[in-house]
Amino acid sequence: MTIATYLNPETLPSNSAFTQVVRVAAAADTVYVGGQNGVDGSGRLVGPDVAAQTRQALANLQTCLAAAGASIEHVVKWTILIVDGQSVQEGFGAFMAVWAGRPNPPAITVALVAGLAVPGAVVEVEAVAAVPVA
Image (cartoon, rainbow, N blue to C red; front, side):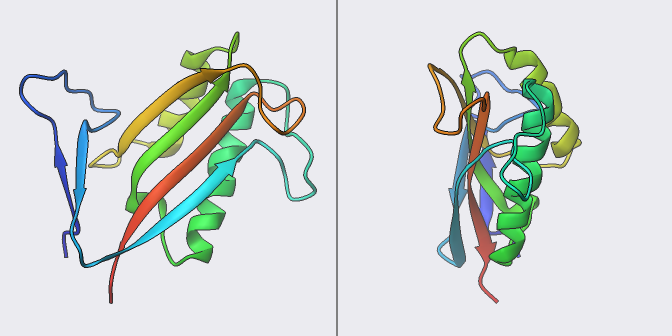
């Protein structure tokens, strides 16, 4: 069952990493995952760099999705916050390695911020997923 339509209007740039518009059908449960940082199960940062923290944040996000009966393929919208001065390209590279060429990339917002709530965190990822109603 297709629950989302992925749209890239012809008058806007198209990119294989994201979709400009995602429309979700009414036959879906919506899952909102709050911001995940690059911390392990004990709450410690996995490293100081944006790539390592992005990989861990995405692993944490996938754990959250699984708890709600969803998977990374159900994500229709990402928000990625990166502390100003960090390499957006390194964070995006780590993100793309996890996304790994799956079809229908979600809509995405990436923003540079002054800081995050977790001391030493340089990246935070949140997601909205749409899961087909059984």
